Figure (cartoon, rainbow, N blue to C red):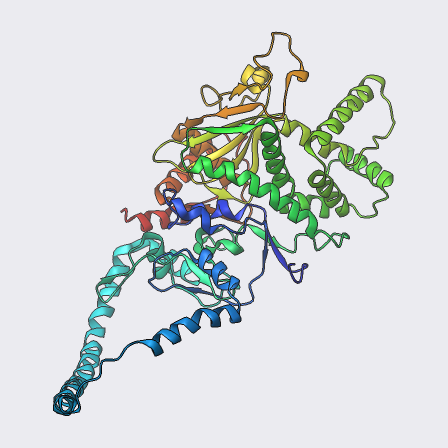
Length: 553
């Protein structure tokens, strides 16, 4: 059981996805998957600070930790007993007393020689210290020269040096952060290994670190994955006390979905899902969209149109809910607990109710399990097509608070909904009518058209379907075979521009060059299409830092 349930850090982007943005994460390491024992979306707040693992290579700490936990003190004592017995039973060769006496003076002389040598070495240590003091002025001049060469980026580095993660204990200046990012930290002319992967003393688990751009301070720092892209006490305003059971159910769905996502990472050609697995995959993605700090704050601050608020108030009367913020959690827990087939059945009922209300102008209240607007949105998302996008070589996707569920559309209906699963890959839910150019008659067309949509190959359990088949021909074991669709750089930068414009507090990137090009593309698009990119954020300081980190003039 998790202690102190009301002091949790809840991630709205899964941790195993955040880890792919660590510079030390390698998609080619076959045993990496053994180091992800906790795919839970709930992370207990650590009691101790995070300390760097100085200069040691990554090891399979999770497996060793499990082995140590499995061993009781009694078992460890049993394991040590044979070792003690073997030492006692070792045969000893007895030498004649005369030979032993003859060897004693020689052995004593040999033992005394190292002591004499060590006494001679002692003054050399003092000389080395004095020599180091003499070289300090030279090193200071070298540092000043380096700072002068960096030019315009000096002020920004000073700001970044003060931007450390809260609650992590201990600080690191900007030079050490940049060195960790580029792997070029040196001491005394000796190159050190990149030690951005850390371990916590309380859990002994690898602590991955990612680059985070903070919009408020306009600085970049290395942040722990455990304390990034989440919110403390997500359910602090919820009346429900036993919310942890819903998080456990969600974590099980996350584990199921993560298997397919890891297959995408590994580059496997066979990317197959059964119909039931695909339904659970879509359900998890949509839940993570709804289970976000943005959506919770919308209910907390009552940010709704007049018609939507009236619908919510009717639902509150029907469900006897007193506070509007409790509607958010009431919807969330029903979606998590209810099987996907039952949700879709209720979704069809809601669609029929809406059509009847529009045709007959009926004022009857919808008395469903959750608010009708959320139910219809959930059902529409689950009926969308799923694609797997692979960024073209030389480009990467970035992260923001809304990257796990951000969408592109005309303001009423989303055409594409994005779920970034690594710097290289993204899962896209495409409007089911988009491949047939449903939106061509509207003033706003989707930016993403052409060959970046592909329906999966379907293998029906009951055989090839007839021309006039119905849903009766479907089976939970029907198989959908997906292919990775290589997306041009321009489309990748456009997706990143959506995140750059919609970000609230943070951004994360892995490649400095790809991030620089994404910001350049965003600057161009916000001038060309201000109707699409209305916020028009300024990233000039971030661009200067990226140039400095890449060593460009």
